[in-house]
Structure formats: C-alpha cells, structure tokens
Amino acid sequence: MTADKIATRDAYGEVLVELGEQHEEIVVLDADLSKSTRTIKFAKRFPDRFFNMGIAEQNMIDTACGLAVSGKTVFASSFAIFASGRAWEQVRNSICYSRYNVKVVATHAGISVGEDGVSHQACEDVAIMRAIPNMRVFVPADAVETKAIIRTIAQDQKPAYVRLGRAKVPVIYDDTYVFHAGKASQLREGTEVALIAMGATVVLALEAAARLAEEQISVRVINMSSVKPIDRDAILAASNETRAIVTIEEHNVIGGLGSAVAEVLVTFPHRMPMRMIGLQDTFAQSGSYTELFERYGLSVPNVIRVIKEIL
Amino acid sequence: MKQFKLQNSVAELKEIAKQMRVAILKMLHRAGSGHSGGSLSCVELISGLYFSELRHDPRNPSWEDRDRFIISKGHGCPTVYAALAFAGYFPLAELDTLRKLGSILQGHPYSRATTGIEVSTGSLGHGLAMANGIALAARLNKRNHHVFCLLGDGEIQEGEVWEATMAAAHYRLDRVCAILDHNGLQIDGPNDEVMKVMPVVEKWQAFGWHTIQIDGHNFDQILAAYRAARKVVGKPTMIVAETVKGKGVSFMENVVDFHGVAPTEEQLVRALREIESSQP
Image (cartoon, rainbow over all chains, first blue to last red):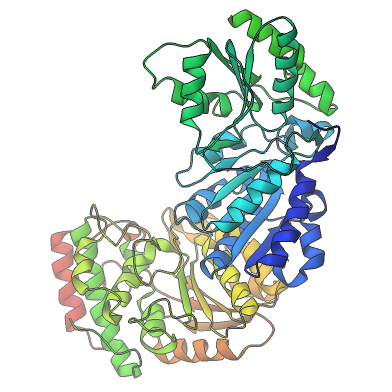
C-alpha cells in the first residue's frame, strides 16, 4: 500500500479517455452528473461520442441499449442510487435480458458519499444488480483496480455494473496488478480468520489484519472485487484453511457481499462460523465519510471486536 | 398463406392486412392468451411498414443500412410476428408456437429469440429511448437508415416516454419517426378515464416534434405520413394515428375487455368468418 489516495471515480475518468483513444466504438452517456462521475473528461476529449441525457436515468439506460445494438460499447454513468435504483427495470429488461453491451458504471456508492445523506447513499445496489441474470458486479478497491476492471470490461461484449466511490481511498495495488472477472485477490495470508471485503472496506480489512497480527491472530484478507461472478474457490479455500469468515461491506448486509459469500458457503458440507459487517438493515444519515464509517461499524476496532467474538 | 413481396400497392396491402388479422387471431387463440385488441389496432400501421415503407431484407436481417422498427407497445407483438413471418424472416409455422415453451416467439418481443426483432420490449415506455440510441449510433456511423417506433396511447403515461421525447428533439433526431397507436383504450378503461393523455398532438408539438395526424387504418394516409416523415429535417416526427382497438372484428372493436385476452374457439370462428367475408 502506498501513501497515495485517489478516488475510484477519478481513475474511471482517466481510463475512459485512455480507452476512448484506442477504441472508436466506445461511447459514454451521463445523466447531468458528468462533473461528479468524471465522465466529463471523456466528454471534453470526445464530444461527438458523449451524450448527456439530462436528469433522466431510465432514458439514459435505454438509449445506451439502442447504441449497443448498433455496435457501440457503451458506458453509462450516474450516481449509484440512480443508476441502479431509478433505472433498475431498464437495466433488467433492456440491458440484461438481451445481454446488451452496456456497462453501468456508478459512482458515489455507499455511505462514503457522506454529507448528502440517505437520498444519495446507495447501500442496496450490489443486491439489486447481482439479482439480475446476465449482470456482473464489480467493486474495485482502489484506483489501480478500477482501471484494470474498466479496461477488462471494455473488451468484452457483455453487461456489467461497476461500483465506484466519491471519496479518495488509499492505493493498494501497483501497476503489475491483473484483474480477472470471477477471481478474488488475496492480499494477506492468514489461517485463523478470513476477512472478505470489497471496495473501500478492503483497506479496513488490511489494517485490522495488521493489528491482529501483533496479537498473534492470523487473518487472511481477500478482496472480493468480483462480487458476481464470485470466486467460489477462494471461499472454499478460506473455509478449509481458516476457522471463521467475516465479510465487510459498505452496503446493507442483506443481499450484498456477505450474502453472496454466504450463498456459496452454505453449499459446502462443513459448518463454518460467519459474521457480516455492514449496514445492519438500516439507513444511514448525513455526516463525514469517516464519522459515518465509524458510526455504522466500518471501523478497525469494530472489525477486531467481531473477529475476537467469533474466534 | 404465402410469403409476400416487400413492395405492394394499396390494394395488395389491404389483402395483406386481412390475412395478418387472420394469422393474429389464430395464433392468439392457439396461444390461449395474449393481447387481441391492441394487436388488431396496429395491423395497417405495421403492414404499411413491412410491406411498403421499410427498407429491409429478410434474407439479410442484420443488413447495416436497414430501417429499424421497434414495437415499444410490446404486447402488440403478434402483429409484428405475423409481418415478420409473412415477409420471410422465419417459417409461418412458427406462428403456431406463440407463447409456448421453447418458442422463438416469446409473449413479448425478445431480440435474442426472434429474427427480425430489433430490441426486446414489453415493459412499456422503453422503445422510444432505444430508437433514439439507434439513431445516435447511425449518426456516428454515418448511416442513413430511419428508425420507426410504435407507441401505445396508454404507454405514453410512462414518464420515460417523455424523457425520450425530450431527448429526440434535443439531439435533433430527424431519423426517428414515432407512431402513436391512438385507439383510446387501455386495460382499465378509456385512456382519459384512467389517466388523461389528451391532447397528444399538442404535447409533441410543444416538445419540438413535427407532427402528422392520420387515420391509422387508411393506407393512403399511412404511407403518405411515412414518406413525409422521411423528409423532415432537424426534428423527429410523431405520427398520431387514430385507430380502433380490436379493428376488423365487430364484437372486439372498442371493447376494453379484449385488451388482454385471446379469442375462444367460438369467437375465433365468428371473427374469421367476418374477416374473410369483409371487402378489402
């Protein structure tokens, strides 16, 4: 981990321009949030291939489908609450049912949006996106992984949902990082507990694991950025090689990463203690990113507490 | 039934429309469910496209320069399925499989299943935005094809229709021609009792569209409107077509209850007798 902090949305804005240079067929749509989602960088570089659809997310998604059936690779962006929620039925019925080449890249996900409050905090998006057949859900942990994921999905012809954040987050990976859909990234070896995280909570997991190491508690840290397709092998290995699994997500524990891991875990023959850290089926509130993380249990002390409880 | 050529006179179109009505009623009856009223109201509008106006090639369904047709009121798909089969996109026998397990003809249009279906629809309000996307792509690809999109009049209660209406005007999508199947009825009753949609022409004019009003069962007016829409520059066109729900079958015409049901055996016999004895 370096000292650099970069918002995943900033990495998205940069990589879109890079890809736009290489691929004529890439077009980008936004719904009046291009300055915030950072698609404005692409808009300025390739004005003919950028379409601002106004504050109309449903229209944006279906327009994206029209472009996709005509051979375009379409990136459609807005805040996660609107891209996943306001336009859910368009995502289901138009993008996913017909497997159109549309990538919904949603920023400002989770409670790290902060002060804007609940109306703008998507904590259900992973659940409602991954429930749709043909949809893939990726949640990068840092700027490097964001670029790796965007480059990967720009090459395939399939739907995807990518969950990005507003806040700056530490850079975990270096440029040698390779992303594979369906593959988790194990960041720390450990034998007692497996901490499985996604997005901004990966850093928390690493910090908690480092502190617990000082107490001779060995914690494995897995970045499950590919929430769907999920890495069954990584979960199987964790269940064979550690004594408990704890998931951490900036999302409601209903339907999110914890649920996705549990859905795999219950198919294994042996029993395994598991806990889910995340929003416990509650709305959050306004506040700073750090205050909110602390208040809703996304903190190193809380992760340590849960791990000690389960062991 | 036979396959029809793609260019036809008005007299020939009337005969095609008659045979399409027969095919629609038969397939709905065999399916045992489906939307009779709204399939019959758009027979002339759709046959006028596939058998006169559209540039398309059933032997090359993915021809890049083809005109596109989107049925945004997806429940009217039996009419499109009949047109596609009549034009030779797939065998006529497939019409017998409508809504059956494993069929290429899903209850609402599914582009991955049916050759000739451009995009999947069925949930109301989606089609016009997809038509806009196709038109934007055509502009980027420097193609000249047009996109026709049929909307239901109940459908325009969906907010997304107006988002797309705004966007088509904003982007000056003059290759987009929307058609409103204005039969005045929806599942729960007359449009304006359920949720007032009138005045429709003025609404699209206010959004900056070119508008044309026609009798949606009159081929002379339908074809003239399609040709006129192609010539409009700088703005999209809305053809408001006055139609009759259940058109062609006396006991179905303007009857709300035939919105979402298929004819029984007895109704089918009566309906076919009526259609076959009618003068085109």
